[in-house]
Image (tube, rainbow, N blue to C red):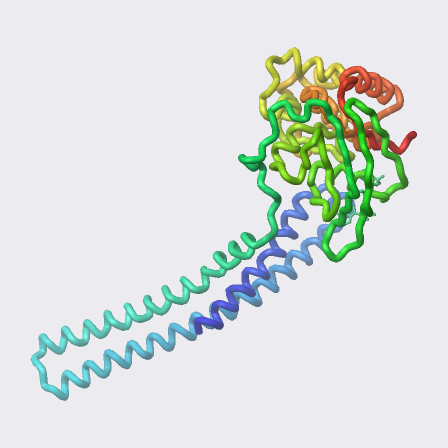
Length: 354
Ligand code: ATP
Ligand code: MG
């Protein structure tokens, strides 16, 4: 019984996940589902998964009934034998009553014990899953106390890349095959190439979003693979190809760690990014930003991301097609801003328009 119910429970949990995923998928895409009038097929899909899950749930109930019948039978047998023994030994009526009622208690206790034992084992399923998650490979530590760079690092902004090799997964081919270049302090470097040639990958490797499998990245004399990820990423500003905004206010998106001394600094960054009118129309710094920046356009999200970079004013700035979704006039404005505000910073720019 124990091993069967454990395996059934596992099947049941497995069959449960698709129900949750189809449910959340449907909720997320509700407008699309309704627009295309495919409610029927989504309902059929949900019902199918529900049925699958019931197919696993039903045997669990049956197995439980099976156990109950066995336990009750055993209990009845104990009661019967105690009654028979009492009559054969001819004990007093009081003693016989005590014996029979104890036997009745015993059968209850016995089934309780068996159920608790199996329940413990069945619920250990979740512990097993946790252990499995614990075994997944982890990112490097955020901070390595004995190898922290100086607070002002990088002071010059020199980037040296030597024979950098990157692959996305161990079984895949190399995406970057031994890239080497040197970028002096304050230099502005443009990175161009056809789609899918590994431009974004290079930036991910510098920020150690993917760990390089060979070669090294040295920034101001420090090999970035030797320091903590938080120390590395907090010192470099990035405007990515697909910008990430969080649900919250404009302020919390621009200055998530409340580092700015006052609002004027934040407004300056917003103006420099050409976003002043947009933010004013939204209702100021405390206007709300929807989940994943849903109430802003793609281009506006890039501008918010740029304003974030302006606010941090790092020594190293990385732009990954930062103006790909922005009109030419705003683009020109942004380029001027970048030239002015990041005059002293080392800048790596990926652009598809040379
Ligand atoms: P684009 O100009 O379109 O932004 P890119 O030069 O930035 O292109 P990358 O995103 O760096 O290109 O991708 C380089 C290569 O890495 C691609 O050929 C792609 O197949 C591969 N690649 C990218 N992301 C992954 C991933 N998450 N898993 C596996 N391979 C990936
Ligand atoms: Mg890219």
